[in-house]
Image 1 (cartoon, rainbow, N blue to C red):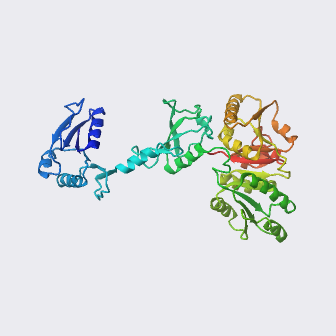
Image 2 (image 1 turned 45 degrees about the vertical axis):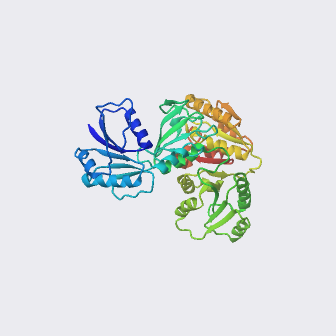
Image 3 (image 1 turned 90 degrees about the vertical axis):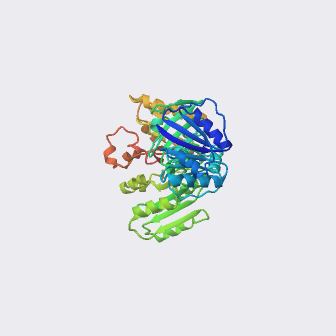
Length: 468
C-alpha cells in the first residue's frame, strides 16, 4: 500500500479530505495533518490516520516523516505556512513529490514540487460553461487539449453523418453522450443533433475539428481556406476565351465573397496580360509569375500564402494530366469552368457512386448550393450496390431537413451521364479522389461515374477533396 501525506487547514482542505474519504480505494493509506481537529463521517480507520500539530514545526513534522511516503499534498490558507512546510519536508525528504494548492503567486524551482494554481482551475471550469468554446480536459493526460468534448449544434455539418465516413487522421471520436447516456461509437453510428462528442487527438488537429463541427452553411470556401484563387497557365489557356472565363470566375467570386487572386504563369502574350490587368480592384489581386522554374512548388506556396480555399481553372487546363495531378495534390476544391454562362445555372447535379465519398463532402455540397442558389439533384443509378447509396440518400434527406433546403432524387436505369449530357446548364459536384488523376484513356471501359467525369467536360464541374 502507498502512504499519502495530506497537510491541510481551512475550508478547502476540509472539502478535499471529505472527497478523499468518499473516494474508494484500498491501495492508499492517508496520513492527515491538521492544525485544528475536524470530525469527518464514514472514515475508515484502517485507511486514515489523523494528527493534530503545526506542520511548520520541523521537530513535530520530522517524527512523521520517518515513514516512507509516496506523495505529499499541501492545502493551507497561509502562504508563509505553505513555504515553511515545503522547506521542512524537503529538509528530510529530498525527492518526495509534493503537490501544493497555490492560491497566491508562489514560485518554486524544485521539479518535484507541483504548484496547482487555484485561480486557473476556477476560471477554466467557468469557461467550460461558455457556449461555442471547446471544453478541454484539464486533469487527464497532459492537459494541453488532447482530450476535448464538443456539443454538436443542430446546424452542424457533422449532423446525421455516419462515423465511418468521417476521416479521422490524428484524432478519434471515442465516446458519444446522448440524452445523458454513454453510447460507444462504431462505423455505422450516426451523429445526432445535441450529441456530446468526446474527442482524443493532437491538440492542433482537435481545434480544427472543433471549428468544422461548429461550422454552419454560408462559410464556403472555409474550412479549406478563406480566398479564391484563379490559376492561369498561358501555355494551356485559350487566349481568345480568357475574358469570358474571368468574367465567369468573378461571378463566382461575388457569390462567395473573400479576396480573389488571379495568378498568371508562363506569360507569353502581352495583350492578354493587359486585358487581365484591367480586372485589378480592391479585393482582386493580379499576381504574374515571370519565372517558369518550379511552377508546381510555386503553386503550392501560393495555396498556403493566399490561404486559398477554392481554385478556379478553365476546362482546357483541367484536361492537362500534370495540372490535374497538381490540383489534386493541393487538397482544395477546384471549380472547372466550361464555355457556358454561370448566371443561368440553377441546379447542382450529384451522381451517386458505389462508395460513401458523397456523404463525406455533403456539408460542402449544401454550402455551395446555398450560396449559389442552386437546387440539389441526386442521380441514383439503380444497380446491385443499392445499400450504400440508400444510406447516402438518407443522409442527404436528413441534411435537407436541417438546412431547410429541398433535394430531388432521380432514379435512373442507365448511367445518368447520358441524361446529363442533354440537360441544360448545371454544375456537377463530385469528390476529388486520386482516381480522377488517371489519364482518360484508362477510363473508357469503366462504369464508374466519377472516373467518367470527362464525359461531361462541356459542363461546369466542382471537385471537392474528400476530407473534413
